[in-house]
Length: 160
Image (tube, rainbow, N blue to C red; front, side, top):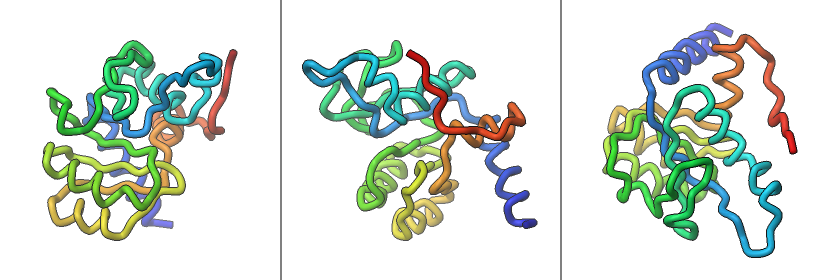
């Protein structure tokens, strides 16, 4: 029980100190796909939510480079981002996490955050060796809601 309290305190500090999030795995609009459907994809819901609470979120998707999603231009990879990234937030399969961790090290991020269902021991080791905080199997949106809005989050609340 004590461990969970410490984790929540650390996550609160991470979220208080972060200003810019690179979100890997944002969904782009596919041809003939309903734009409303895009807005409902988990990464896109989380991106919009974090923007609503003052974070700059840079969408990362190599297949959507140059598109505009939630008002931000999509970048193809972390190394193409020109500004300082505080959190690298990952919506990709666990097997991709070590490569993403290596990229996160190269750009000098402070936090590697893997969303629900994502964890990889090697990614954790890479982050820890470089003093990058490692969060896995947790939703950044839900953690924000729980800590700052004192709500018991349900993922996600969708609107048309």
